[in-house]
Image (cartoon, rainbow, N blue to C red; front, top):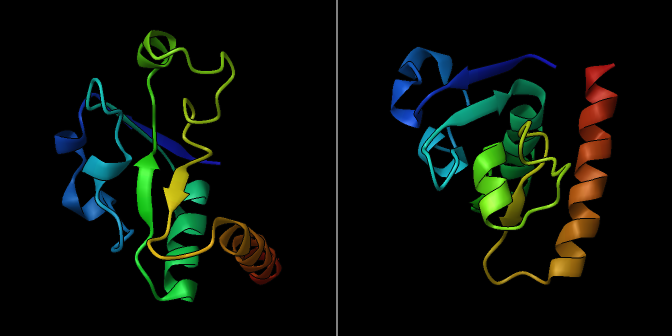
Length: 113
């Protein structure tokens, strides 16, 4: 899984950001502004957004190890390598959303083979 790292989300070249439904700012570390972008994880996130046709709210994208420690995050949190996101969808049942997201990711995996 290719990963790119930038000291601040403002350092990400516009040409390098290929996920139109999300900004580098919303996926960056809330404390430092740093961003570590895992392209496969971002591709899956964009796929979900495109399939649902509704906004996905990124509540947490990348979190730097130091910020993770400050907030008491899990020592092996998957937000540090940005392979996981905390996302929400407005006006949607969380359980139904999680089930639909799993099904969509299975579809995405089938398309990648």
